[in-house]
Length: 468
Ligand SMILES: O=C(O)CCC(=O)Nc1ccc(C(=O)O)c(C(=O)O)c1
Image (cartoon, rainbow, N blue to C red; front, side, top):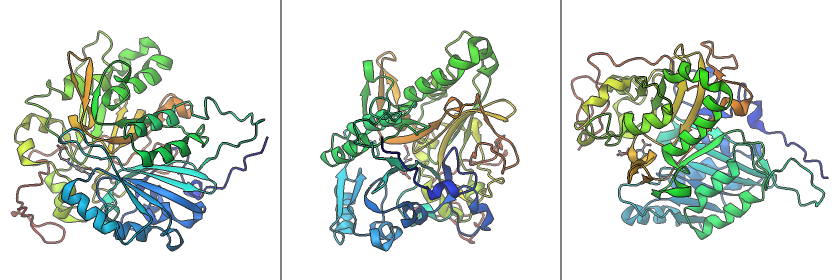
């Protein structure tokens, strides 16, 4: 059979990048050495060092087209580019206008059948002569999102084309998928767009060997899911993957008791309307599925939510302007004061990103001493029912409004029973983006709310915040 020459992937040369391939974006205005550790810029992701680009696709919510084209190397700026978006009406008109100088840009509008849903997914397909690379991340394609924020990036290997030779005995399982069903789940997600332009990318993905993928796809698409589709998306998918890959399979039932109290940490850049108390959705639905309370213990589930306080925003590199990307509205916040007791500050001293305001979204489960990580998810999904879904029809149907996608790291796919979280940062500990244990809000702290003024204290640029 043809020996697939493992092409040298420049991403592998970045210190500590393997085996997780999980990066933050580089931050301007902090010492360079803090950027070196597991950080990438968009230009680095798109650079010619990865091979000869044939064409690409960019899934996102917000686009600055001229700036995006500039992030591609000049020799790749005329390659076909598919923009997958959820824009409508005047936003669609301005997106079309922005794309008109570029004949090779095609627009694919995601079907948005449900009100208040967003096309939130942030993903890149990069097709090279050598193979296809998939990037799943949290940044809008606008300069502000790649400048001074904390954002997350999972960057796949360059998956090689499945060789055509008939005697190909490579380890390809059913059409060369991974143990984590990465290809199957990515295709399941793409199929929901029922888009002709995405047919080409689905066929291309089918033709590539993704058996080396070591993460699970956790996605959301608009719809009402029951029966066979019940656990395919949203928080039920996360439950389905974590429940069978950690507690039950190799930790043994007896140990389950030990894990009942292990806290779950959620971290995000916006919050939806979650109901009049925690029992409406947060604890009864979202936490319960993540906690897998499938046993008799009725432990008080421990949930810690990291969302920037006003002070975190005021003292950030961008100052109050960072709050423009934290669209938690007064109208929503005023109806859920009960949420504040779950809130923790954004703190990332060990990654030198305390002042790089977070737009990343992550969810994880950790031991009580914060030394072991049971699972880790980086995703586009904020803490909202629109993103994660809400159960209906006596818990037989999951209703989701938005498109979201993320990748889940499970220890079993990295041949260990838990990921180490050690306080020194150069060890092989999992590169979590923030400090653990999380830092509680101080008594005077309030969650950042985007649509009210902050004038009593000026920010790091000596500005105040006056939305209108
Ligand atoms: O959900 C709610 O009810 C509040 C509205 C909201 O949060 N909207 C929103 C839209 C786009 C993005 C994005 O940047 O793609 C983000 C984000 O990522 O914070 C959040």
